[in-house]
Image (cartoon, rainbow, N blue to C red; front, side, top):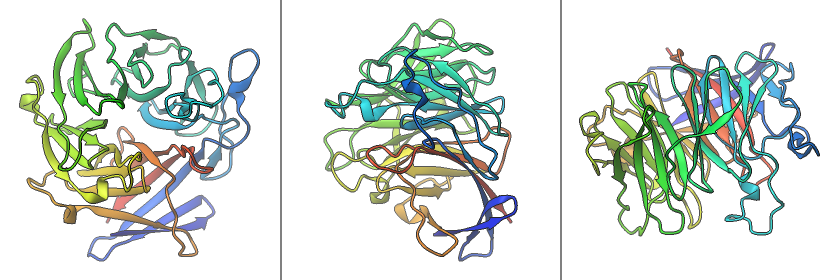
Length: 363
């Protein structure tokens, strides 16, 4: 169990982590409140206001609202945040207002004015991935369509392949020539991992995820590659982590259950369990959307159990619980051995809509 204490300093919010072992952790949090003021996407001309970061120490508020952020990917010092607007998705909320124009929002990690990339109407994006050259891929929950943005442009164009009915989490292969995505059907409960070649837009392999004991379906949610080429996948319905060994990536249906834990499963039907996944400095980090927890675990373990999960217990500067509000996508900051980004989507709540940058220093 990790314990985080937030303390205000001249430079911002500093979070001190203590742990009952010989190694101490220090974590510094930089937060961008994505739902700060208004909703610039409701402009009559169909465009959104320019999103900027306010200069307020380590808490930076954006000037307009991001409609339910889900995932984040970093390229050239910019964190590209997916604006899902799931609070206006008819499949979830039949009586919701029509969505505002869709977009990706690029938040500079060093602060400053943010960028926007428009997305097609009724796109309802969820997953995002960026190649080492800066090419962005984003997928649609509503249609399964995949769009791509060339480096240095702000125009999203359709990728040749789409994944019916829904494209969820996405990641780029270690060879930088493939994109891998979760293809999940919220109606039938069937889900799989699909690998696609970037050049030629052909399918490499598909890997069906099997339900956990007592479950009738699965929901493939997010995925990440480890340095050895293995692909790690979160399954939100049964609280499972799957592993696809590097040597089996191109062999269909090679996903193996690496871990199933009650702590990673949703507490009630209709909720989401383990969601975002990333690797940082030799550790695996997992975000559990409901009830809103963050875990780490050693990915080198051969047969892990729930006892190997370390829950990160957040408390504020007064010692009170500091709860994450529906954490979703997480990612390590490229080139850093200490920095992690966490998205809180806040769907169905008054909170969340926040992108948090945390710094973890092992001493």
